[in-house]
Length: 349
Image (cartoon, rainbow, N blue to C red; front, side, top):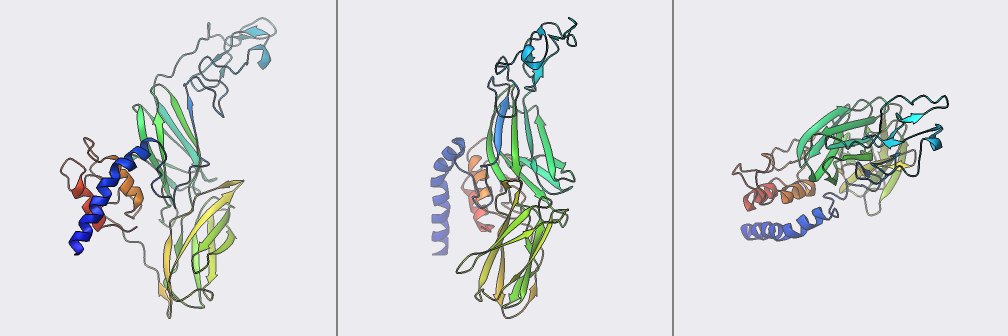
């Protein structure tokens, strides 16, 4: 009977693949709703001829600006490949040139580029994945801001993901979003706000004792902590100047059973998505929490879990040629039913 149920589960996955693939192409399927929130992420394209937020101009579209409107006496205004005004052909009041440059016509970008920017944790490592493969990494500044740039990328649709790791080695949840890349255009993905990391000091806590919930986020941000029970408890605590937060939760109101906690951050009007969900047991004794075990198979994005994010990545590569080695779980050069069965075995949810 167990084998029959397992086969039904796998067949259900396979029959769902066309729907999931269609949703991915329509940008409506975001693999892990608890860890994905793209409402604040802004995707703009420099070089597509349309002025987007943050651009002064784009191609021949100058937004009605002229050399005169910028304070020059004359000349020809144009647009740089970076979507900033090119005033080199504008003239100043004494009749001299504004810095040479001749005709100042629009020169399209010579390469295709995608820029990512946002907030993580101070001096943390930020990793960017492209279709489940590590594409680049960088270190966030002391203010938690980071920037990553990919150049020479081919045109097409990609699933990009970002995560960060705090000073204790705890990883954030994965922020995943699809991006369409156009040849010769610079795509800017801004407003990324990586969710806080989260951990607890006990895997089991004696009812009535405190359990410490802690992690790291943007410095001086407000952290909202959720603890699930028959009702959901919300608590707030402020992160310090290094982004570290700690909340001692009194377990007296909780039933003696398994519970879950997660957190999110708010800073300057911006709100992150929720962190990973961490479980703990309210019981009759205190047991120190052990480090999270690393999952070796089916963990496509290296977040130490096998869940819907990994499922969506595998679904994307279903029957596609030349899948990455991390997705081809049995190394037979293709993604099929066998790979999904392996993923099901290692599933953590």
